[in-house]
Length: 563
Image 1 (cartoon, rainbow, N blue to C red):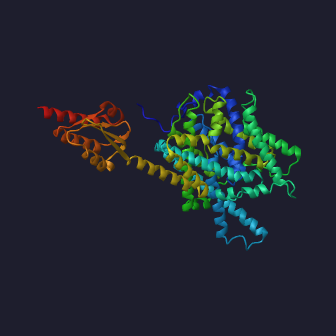
Image 2: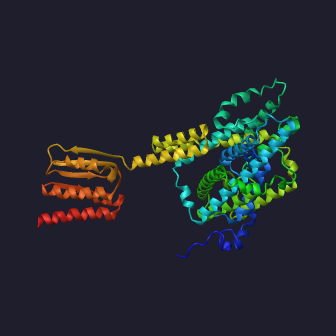
Image 3: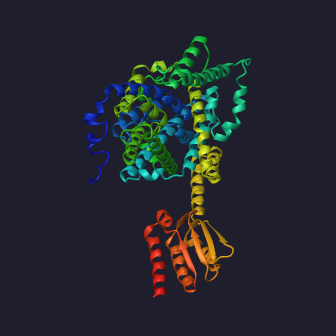
């Protein structure tokens, strides 16, 4: 078998690149427009949720198409800013901003002009810190891809993954609920949840400032439009994404009625929002917090990307994902985003599934969607100024609600209460503390459950009345850790008894326990007893080499006794 080439070599051999990239031009052209229309509002919404300018989300979407689209190991996957990373980005930006202000002596001693200047400097510093964290994230992903570690990022318990997604969903819902009402999120997840009633109270239509009420109407209209379009849109026009329809309906309604609500602010020149690396940026690499943030971003972004690629493989019959190449491609994209001071990116299931459902056949669709986004932002930035913030907040409220997947909870319950417990604990810690702590707690719980599974052994012994037959049912994992218990049970077998060992409920048996059975059987048969084992079921479930050794040992023992 020929050795696989690194992702950056022989690009013309990749599916959908070179001569094959234009083989389905019509389908890819149409699907790229659909993906662009889905991605546009989400890029801006995730940026606002992260506490940065919408333009930085658009830059990430453009890089996701034009850079990652060419290199991706999952050709039909569309990349861009993801809701799953907004918590990390928000905490990073807010923390760096506050730390800078504190290092300068705080705001209290300053007049209004100096305070505004310091806040601007703090935000600029936070953007540089964000860029360096994303750069570290990309570098780690690139190294992991080149070292072929892609599969390892998928080695996480489904309970932890579902808990992670649900926790992110709750955080998105809680923070964007305030944005949907033109209020400001409180910061931490639990605070945002507890402050929801106070934001609702601001929406009294009789209040002198009824802008919050207007924003609430826009939010409700947006979510209603989303649901109605998904359910009742005619098949011929259903290809138009529901978020885009909701944005158009809400924006037109706000403009016609004359509602005074907060609007999206996008610079006429996209380069105005680019934070190029500077000497200060490289000095930030000496900061421990920047490296921790970069590592967390890399871990979460990689897991989300590869889970998205796995889910996408189930939706089409084309080229399967190459996880190492996809991971390296994401790394290249995040390195570029880091140098531009943009948001981190992942493979995003919303726009990727829209890409497949719209009929995309090659990577050309993902590439073109980035080109359309660049063209739109450069040529028509003024159009985005008509979009209410409440509208994008409402879209993310709906997105957060969908991430709390009730069906996933039911599936986990089928595998036992422990899986559901890991899910709920992961979710709760993420909401109460932070995302990294929640994931670590979930992984530790999953590891403890695995340790329990491989150290838990139960035995049930039954004697048939009027005969010498004894049945020993072994359940769980028979490892050297539980060898004393198994040995104690064997010692209770009467001399001369015919022992039938049942393995139907046994999950694992190691060499030490097989040796114990062999040695015990030899001694037992010298006393007139007998050991009966269903060899076919034992061979089918465990290492045939070890079980055959036990079978030969018992057969040799009987032959010696006969001779």
